[in-house]
Image (tube, rainbow, N blue to C red; front, side):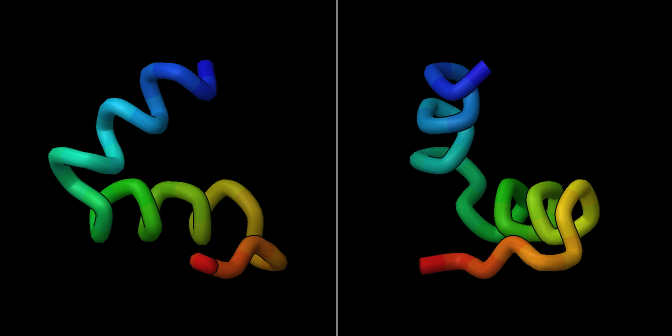
Length: 30
């Protein structure tokens, strides 16, 4: 869920970025 995503972002922003990019090709890190 979004809460766990935010928690993960603090620990591994690049990992989350890659995860979201894989899930949604149109997603862009802001």
